[in-house]
Amino acid sequence: QKEVEQDPGPLSVPEGAIVSLNCTYSNSAFQYFMWYRQYSRKGPELLMYTYSSGNKEDGRFTAQVDKSSKYISLFIRDSQPSDSATYLCAMSHNAGNMLTFGGGTRLMVKP
Amino acid sequence: GAVVSQHPSWVICKSGTSVKIECRSLDFQATTMFWYRQFPKQSLMLMATSNEGSKATYEQGVEKDKFLINHASLTLSTLTVTSAHPEDSSFYICSASTPSGSIQPQHFGDGTRLSIL
Image (cartoon, rainbow over all chains, first blue to last red; front, side, top):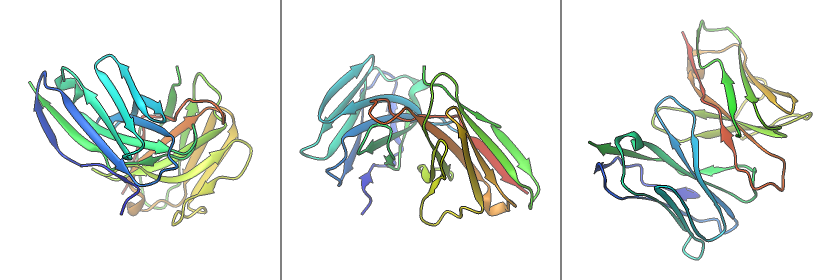
């Protein structure tokens, strides 16, 4: 079993839909949780990061962490075709320390 | 802020050539940089952790004599793929983080696409 599980998709939604992306993990020592967006042939771009449990909102993006369930989510409101990319969750024990990535979910937002 | 620049973005070379990839943190000092490898439609695989002024720490299965890492300053780390062969063709990505204790996560470069003929 992988330390971080993420559904690979692809997830196809119509423009304007609310998108829910999720990861589960097995290591309770993870404290920092991140979501990255990666376009084809580009490096990952940091979208959100949170420490411990809770919610964090930034524009159309909301990140949720539930440490008791070892489950994290990223919600995208009013999805746009430009949101079409692969979304990677990542987590670590310490800030700036080695990241453990999920396998990534490929999202397609259709106009 | 937190911009990481990687160069070159794409390189094609003959088998047996050594290729150097640079990773620079442009607006912050990075005591730690990470090198990843990514195959198509797969997630990032950590190759090594590079700390400024000391030897890199390689992940299991990564040949340190094949993938030479130098982190000579707080803003520059280099990865040299020595005597590259077609099986080394991949997408190589670096990231940088700020000193321990900060809450800043890793920031990634745009990757280097390496094609060995």
